Image 1 (cartoon, rainbow, N blue to C red):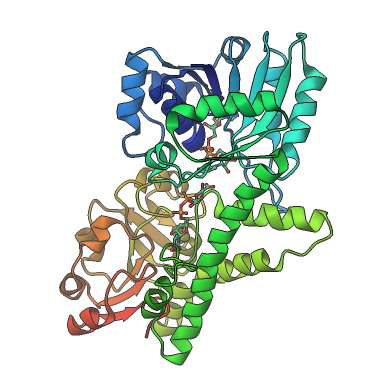
Image 2 (cartoon, rainbow, N blue to C red):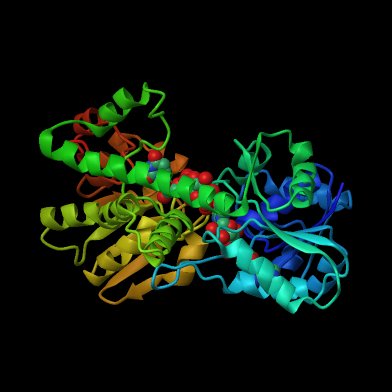
Length: 438
Ligand SMILES: NC(=O)C1=CN([C@@H]2O[C@H](COP(=O)(O)OP(=O)(O)OC[C@H]3O[C@@H](n4cnc5c(N)ncnc54)[C@H](O)[C@@H]3O)[C@@H](O)[C@H]2O)C=CC1
Ligand SMILES: O=C(O)[C@H]1O[C@H](OP(=O)(O)OP(=O)(O)OC[C@H]2O[C@@H](n3ccc(=O)[nH]c3=O)[C@H](O)[C@@H]2O)[C@H](O)[C@@H](O)[C@@H]1O
């Protein structure tokens, strides 16, 4: 077993650290956020992820997992240091690598023995080479240090399962020493390991994410055409899914993809291509379709209603997908400001995202409109003139069509996640609009 340090305790770093401890490594998770570290020491997860707290508490109690802000003490004794800090999108679409650089320098200035540094964060192709040079430039002690790439493929809402039961482990190395060490670290996971050079590993991550984003945008593009020609996108997706070359996953048309990664990773790869004089037409198409898709229902409703001013608007779902409290690039963040600007009185429901959303849109008056957060769907629907569904939470899917008819002032529903059957809504007397269906 190895002494493992993990820099960054977000979705990737914390889950990775906990899972490394779970398989037997001695892990110390480092973060700069003192509040997060104190919470984690009490066994409280700073992120909403199923099964995570139990594993945190178990491994902490068994002494294989600790948390600190003292990066020097963490890094100096570590055999391997995983970097899992953020690489957020910059205004020009490129990845912000400043957090990576800070950690690289902290590592360089503190390691006291030979050390493998592993970049788990999603970084543009070639970044690992720069990180390795950067560390060597700032190295204080005469030790061997090498950088390897180990991109992460977990999805939020299933992060622990996706880590312990990953489809594959990608490792990108430039030496036998680094490759053998990473293979040994991942041996207890008993998962397929694909060992490639560093730059290929970095590209595998972007190529995978951007393909998934393109698959979603493709289905949304086809959905928009389906509506114009009288086809039903859900039937089309079903018919396509039997072809194993297409597969059945990520064929769900909707109000567009959000999250912390597809939006940023599509733009970052497009930016890298442009930097190298190449136009990544497919990824650009994915971005363009998604941009328009986010407000497609708002525009449809705007045509149907004279105005939203003074209307009670029920919004069901604030997070970018179910199973997480993450709002990054959620459709709600695109549509709620538009509704408020038109004077809508919004009644918003989300089982876990409300606290995060309140920090962006406090309850009360906001410009011409207002926003109120409610505890359940019925409260949002009661007396509402119109309803938007942005996230397919189980609690939303559990609402029957007749409840919209019974509770709403006017049963007018815009469903961004195609939760309901068109016939079921029609039978219940609900005026219902969705994506890619008439
Ligand atoms: N969120 C996801 O589902 C996935 C994210 N990724 C990639 O993983 C990386 C991290 O993403 P998230 O975990 O979502 O980020 P996050 O923003 O949730 O967490 C990053 C953490 O790093 C900490 N941090 C910043 N500077 C630090 C430093 N100098 N030392 C120690 N900690 C520091 C922050 O306080 C924060 O807790 C990104 O590159 C992302 O693209 C990859 C796969 C999945
Ligand atoms: O790099 C990352 O951060 C991660 O990004 C995604 O994971 P995540 O964004 O957490 O969630 P997904 O389940 O992929 O959903 C992303 C977005 O696509 C949307 N989506 C997904 C599937 C689909 O069929 N249609 C669709 O609109 C979801 O509503 C959501 O807004 C990838 O699935 C992970 O493999 C990857 O590691």
